[in-house]
Picture: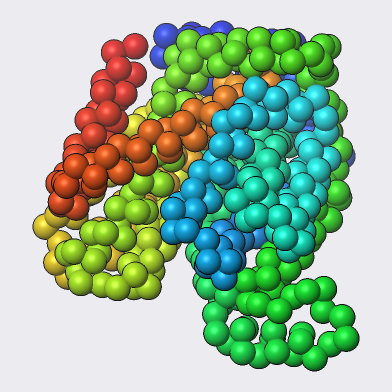
Length: 453
């Protein structure tokens, strides 16, 4: 029996073969009416396209700001002569916001128009940047930006299922992740440029000649000001996203109810067969991806004799491959066949293992591009499947909040495991082998478990 996504707005039943039968409702001259079980709304085609394009533009500017701000905040810590341990802790402060706020951000996302939620999120990021400029410690100010990011995530992904029919979700996720990856690459380059000597030597000097420069007298401060402008652009774009009907109104706003509601959603998604596999894969990916970025830096120094700047460029190569994989998945994989891409995760783990044999940077580029392509090819369909099942079971905002909690816990655990291996004196080659074996064996287990069902 197939999933029936058409119906009276009820969750689709779980079928033995986990396929989806997409049934679209009637079409008229001006409207495409998607069945309530799929999207729950009737949307004007032009409004839908305009809203989706506006969403993509806002996502790019917001994510570009996130990635550039990281480098600006690190540079600001150095100008303050902060202890070295505060640099890695900076990212932890950002991640903790996702974990602590996970029980609440999904409910907020589903209870309000998601365009307005994203507008509020970028406004909070603007406040975080302003707080950093007026003297609040970068760790605390960056955690405030993390609050905005935590609120933004369920809305930006949850709105896709409201704008688009299920058969377009993989395509939409491909665009979303492709632009996110582009913002990671350009954010690193842009952030590095803003905190560089050219800005310090020219732009800041020009600012110092002004009667009033807002206290901007260093390159990191100027970079933060520019990032604040990026968030402002994103917020303006968010404001013009067409409103959609509220998916789930909050019947009870008490802390006890919100916590109970979140944990109900948490276990509901983990107990659902398709929700379970997609949640496990996306959590594994983000934990592995964050760890791999640091592993590549150490591996490039040991195996390829590259300095830090060159090694950082290698991490961007993975992002390029990820974008390529996302585009392939968007064109070749539909959401009803999402589970068929799981074996690609096994190949990704084997490619990581192959890194220990590489001694030439050109071969390294090819290996890392392959890793990125494989990662993008299975991440995008899994994201789409998780959004679909979450929307059917509990509301997309709730499901993305559950996803964020699991992914960020995975990041903390895998980074912790990596740090313990380094502390124990493991060579980077041993770390790569352990990492590759863990990735390929875990994806093999999930693939076999899915096939047995």
